Image (tube, helix red, strand yellow):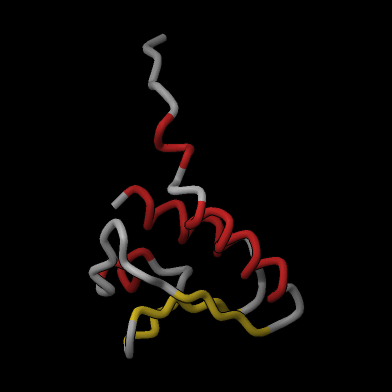
Length: 80
């Protein structure tokens, strides 16, 4: 669920409309609940679509996040 949260958080930083597509299912990338309904697991092919003023940047940044295999999740957690 954490990768989907990262997608939603990144999508919320853009003003354009952004959707993630899996097969025939197309959902709002800014909604964690909608993303959960995709049933996207590791290895599943997703597409990112956007329309609006910052659509190109939104697509490229979300694709980069997804293609990175969510490297931010790999960083160790340190107790303070």
